[in-house]
Length: 368
Ligand SMILES: O=P(O)(O)O[C@H]1O[C@H](CO)[C@@H](O)[C@H]1O
Ligand SMILES: Nc1nc2[nH]cnc2c(=O)[nH]1
Image (cartoon, rainbow, N blue to C red; front, side):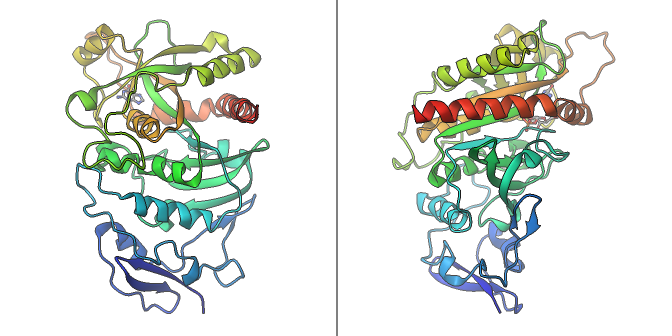
């Protein structure tokens, strides 16, 4: 009978089909405790991974066999995922997929492929529900599916997060951004993040795309940054520069894609600001953000991009404007998450094409 061995701090626990899972340390590992061999879905259409086949997870494959230091405190505001731990998660994935992506994609609200988008577009895919990946957080927000998918977009190998983690879900920022470091150690060089955002700029309409050229990290202003806590130089420097966070070359490619797709009329370039959420903004807050030069506001992406830049990844991000920010005290309009998700779904065909073409350009550029 096959089993997956997981070792924490040198103590190995069998997490297998015989129901004899041993006690593990750490709140993050609770979900692994009861897991039968991790569910891994392979292929397109995807089928469930068969643990008793030759592909079976066995103890020798376990990334944690050598007992990496654990996440010391699941909800610490400071970064407590060690390099070794991230390395072990990356190895866990590399042991189970053959493709080696250089491009990592994070899908925004409603763009996670729940209705088909990128999930359908990826071929030869292997997909890991987040709960089956050691130490991974799990998303709690509708519109964020919770799977890490490896596959080909067109003919380009990618790994794709179908669902991300937000600060308002209760995760510290370092944990929200932890998958980006996993991508890095898997070998990804380019991060491509999307998000749903409220549009402040008068010229923007619902359904438009905003290529992010810069951000205002309001959470950082309030003393909260994913890089807080001990710094491991193997990831990057203590004080990383962030003024060139959104790669000018990839932004140029994205604008070329917009021209090729004849969607320049709905494509802009602007400044994104992150707020903590989950409450949407007051009118005074929107007016303040507008005065600061913010074009779109959301609750994600910035900590992912900071983490990516810190470890030397090239980053690109865009917002789908899912709602217009309300600036008028007389207005009865209220933003809501359902309209956010609906707009993501409506724009799926366009975004799928946009991302597929952009990924191809990045890959061609990398090969030059
Ligand atoms: O940024 P993404 O994940 O796309 O989601 C955006 O949409 C949600 C609000 O409707 C918030 O989570 C906000 O950040
Ligand atoms: N903060 C914030 N996040 C969003 N995500 C989608 N729309 C919005 C919005 O209006 N405000």
